[in-house]
Amino acid sequence: MGGAMLLTFYKGPEFKLLHRLPHPKLGHISEAHHSHPPSTSHQIVGSFLGIISCFSYATWLVIQAKVGEVYPCHYSIAAIVCFFGAIQSTIMAVCVQREMEQWRLGLNIRLYSSAYAGLIASGFAFPLLSWCLRKKGPLFIAVFSPLMLIFVAVLSSLLLDEALYLGSVLGSILIVGGLYLVLWGKAKEQAKVSKEDNLDHQSQRGELEQTSTV
Image (cartoon, rainbow, N blue to C red; front, side, top):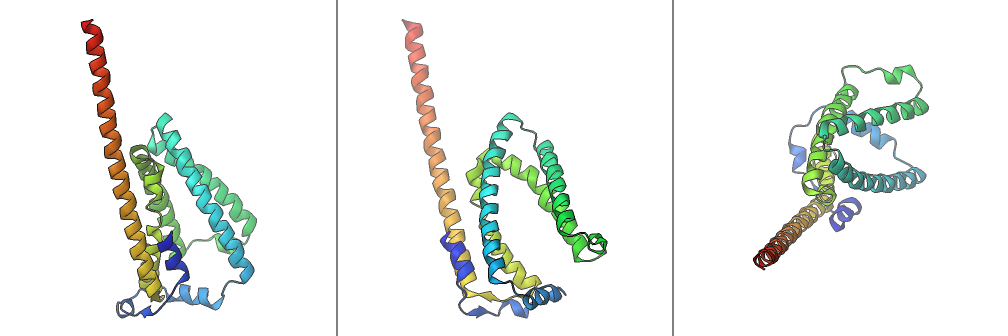
């Protein structure tokens, strides 16, 4: 959390190392974003919706872990989630945007982003998430979420030619350090639980042997 807050709220000096690398021609997206800065009310609403999104995602991980125990079919779960998500997105899009021109997909960034969201972010990610939830549980999945901030900061600097600041680098270091500490603690905890389970099995086996001898 400290790394995420530092990456978000602190800037510091700018790193110009990535500006020397070649960038794709996506600068018009960044220019359009900076030409229409969000208002204060939009920032408040966006922050509130972001918090709701985080809470909903955390709740979904817990529910998904329980569903995976009862119905361990990763592809079927992913298909059901994507189907209902498509219905909700369609209803929302119809309510917000009713111009037919906005619904047309040409051979541009809109088509590429839609294909990436459908094939990679949904079709590939949801079965992988279901499998990881079944193997490691929801906490193991959620602890990797702050890494998205690092990827967004680096990719936006590479693809959109946005500035990369010292706060982003320091926040990324804290995020990676916190992730390592959590994984290290989980590994120690799992080893301790496994050792206690082995001791319980051995004690139960000894009790059974004593009972059979008597």
